[in-house]
Length: 416
Image (cartoon, rainbow, N blue to C red; front, side):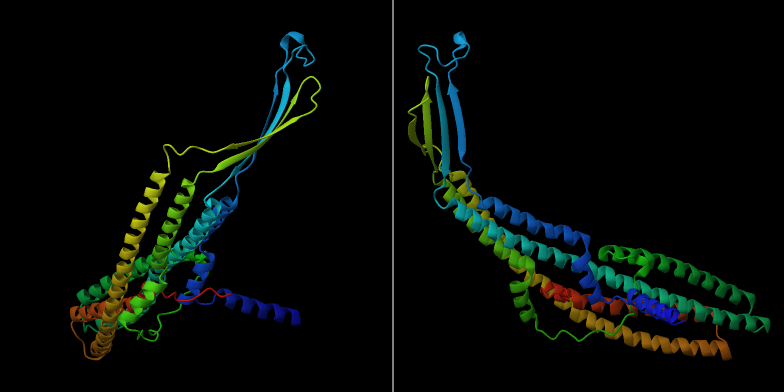
């Protein structure tokens, strides 16, 4: 009996853990640690580190040998009279000059940092997508619950109307109007339910979850307002947003590339050592050394250097553009957030008023009677405002989180 109770308690605990509601911050954590696209992007950093390994390598030495020559007329023997056969072994070692290796390593390190910033920007863009999908799913859920509740309340109203019809207080045309309205409610339930299921599936895919286990809390009151000024948000974004930092780092990479191409213009030399042994005894070997250096008559790597300089100018222009774009993004998001605050408050006040009217109309219809078309018109108006208040609440939460992302503020960090 004790074992049965223990298993039951364990089952309840595990079920609660797996069915816990997923808040937006939970979804952010889940996305940053489990999203497949972000995992794929993360490997780009490893590729950059592999480029660093290549940059650290030195040129390989070259070893070659030869045997000359074989006397064909005397069975390839080197004992034939007058045979000039000899054995040669030669080792060449390229020597890089101009600090090429050091500059390659420096450029590779800068590229790793640049790639890391691009991955962070990829995460920020993914969070923007998550923001829209998560709150759209939450809005679908709220609409679905409301339309179910509205249909339930309407069936009660229909029951009252049928009682009135039985007592000949209303005619059959009024009852048919209500029946048609019930059909609209049924159709609306099916449409909203299908929308909820598809959006939930999209969200589950983003978070690498099973859609059947995904539960989202109901719409909650808006969190604490953002009180930071617009200028402060812009300044923070320009020094913290990943795409802005990546643009700055891109300039650094471009400068390092110019230095690398200038280093590549410095000619390398090749030093060699050689041993020769002559037939017929192959004794008393001769040792020699050699050196080779290209003559810079035609190519001083001018093309690559000039190309790197143009790339630097592009990077600086791009940095200026991104800085202005960041300021514009934050400004637009700030205006949207402040406007949505006013819209949300106004919509809520309108809904409170129409909700009171709805209750009064129900009482009038139940106790005294009123035209069915007027009643239906009031119900439609109430349902429209009901949808509007959900939409405005969701839009406000989206606007607030969107402003944070535009300012380079991550909603939540990954738990260590």
